[in-house]
Image (cartoon, rainbow, N blue to C red; front, side):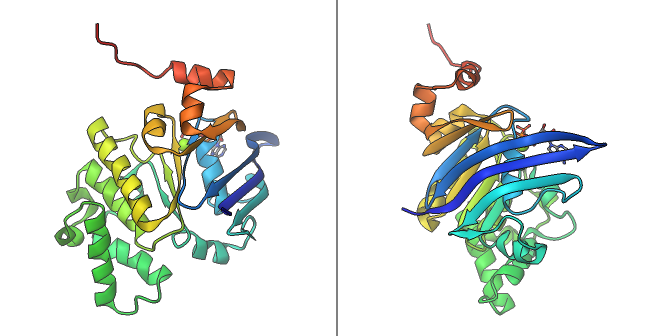
Length: 265
Ligand SMILES: Nc1ncnc2c1ncn2[C@@H]1O[C@H](COP(=O)(O)OP(=O)(O)OP(=O)(O)O)[C@@H](O)[C@H]1O
Ligand SMILES: [Mg+2]
């Protein structure tokens, strides 16, 4: 099957006061349709920078330089003008960021914020009632009572805010969902619910998910394949179960050794 996303030789350099610091060094991988691909690595390994480079979310030159190739359905999107990238962001590649409160606007209701994305990206939903109906549908799909559409973000718990973020990302039915540590701020039972939710939505909408995490438990439960980054380079790639059971690279073995295991005597 053709990949929906093909990343080839992606390099990201940051420049400051004449110094260059490479954050991503020649990373290549594909994401297939309907696949959940985990991007794993320690803090600072380049996971977020890689995902943000895809749709031009990083600061531009002279602070930051991105090279390589990113193809979405065979079309090169790296270096497209901002006007074109804005159409891709949200509509084709949607993001869920780690901290929902920094991505939700406190002064608008959650329903209004989801509708705003629909107004921009889904012109087929012409009327306000049609958009309201879609808002109710996506809130329901992520397990939030649709009657809460008129509530403000601060009226939701952390887990519910994360669900609202997912609803917002899903509203426009993107081809690809980039979930950057979507559950780090949540306790483990809510983490499990959110990951189960992602799995069920993948089934329902057939979307592909780039799941960024440093949690191998989440990789084992959720991902089909995994890519391991280390200091900006890809050091390992394979089926998630194989990467976890038979890690090839010393660094992956070290990462796995840090995962706590429960032992009952
Ligand atoms: N705007 C920026 N300016 C300069 N350097 C940056 C910038 N953003 C990221 N970096 C650097 O790029 C490298 C990769 O950062 P990145 O945020 O991708 O790490 P990460 O793997 O997502 O880590 P974490 O697990 O902590 O989120 C780091 O060394 C970071 O300091
Ligand atoms: Mg990060």
